Image (cartoon, rainbow, N blue to C red; front, top):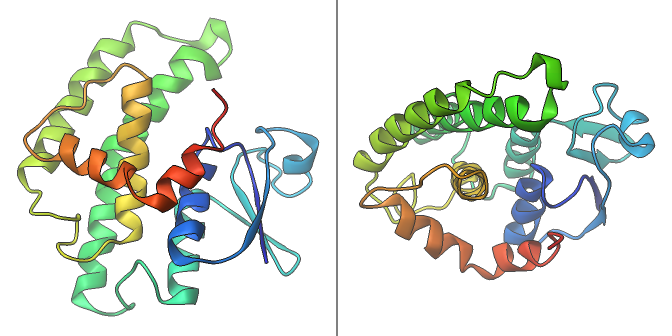
Amino acid sequence: MYKVYGSAKSRAFRVLWMLEEIGEPYEHVDVGPHSAEILARNPSGKVPVLEVEGTALTDSTAILTWLADRHGKLTWPAGTLERARQDAALHCILDEIDAVLWTAARHSFVLPKDRRVPEVADSLKWEFSRNLDRLDKGFEGPFLMGEKMTLADIVLVHCLNWARAAGFPVEGENLPAYGKRLRAREAFRRVAALVPR
């Protein structure tokens, strides 16, 4: 059984959702970043951490990729052209969506107050909208990779939810409906029930 450390309101949501989608049992340890439980497993203090056979795996995307490869689910096989396209989509999301949201969070509440630059928010919202618009226009559906759901969908939908919660507009002809459709999945809803209200 896997053990997932991290609050469901963090990027640990991605790992929990993945495990629900692929039907693997897990134990969820609801702890925040820099807690004693996390620091004992990840010196950076960041969540999530996935504990597997006494080994701590870190970084949500690395964990998702490892789980997908290990179980042969929500991914294309390594070495295929489809996998190269999947990896390109995933890295695009991380560079152009996730990184913008993370920068906004850092300048809102993560960094010490004297290191925050609140004025960057408008620029980040502009960049987010521009990047999301490009992604929306290239979307063919029903999933990012066409007919097959992959771990890239988990990361993107998590980012879309994060954006909405942070006050970033999620607009376009395709992605708002796509996000709504994936949020209706039973696996997503089971994890969403773990998020503190």
